[in-house]
Image 1 (cartoon, rainbow, N blue to C red):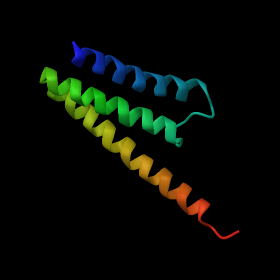
Image 2 (spheres, rainbow, N blue to C red):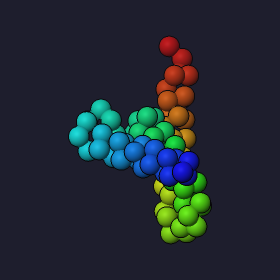
Image 3 (cartoon, helix red, strand yellow):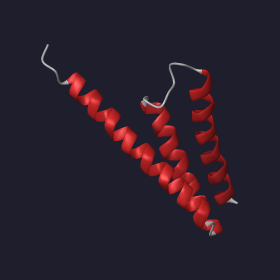
Image 4 (spheres, one colour):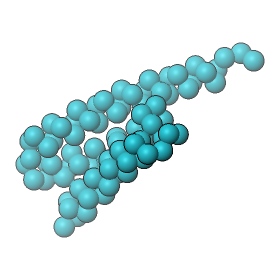
Length: 87
């Protein structure tokens, strides 16, 4: 039962980030919260896929997690370099 709850919460995270990206201009792929929702959501869905032995679902969410993680690192590097500029 816990696996199902984890899967549903992960799905909600991914869907919330998608819908907000579509309809709210300030929320997009270049924001930390968008990528954080995708990282957490896909991580939860990876766990769920493993419990189901759903390998295509596992691969899809693993790629999703890696892509969101790479994007998050780029955003944080950009943010860090912006905040470390001499004033």
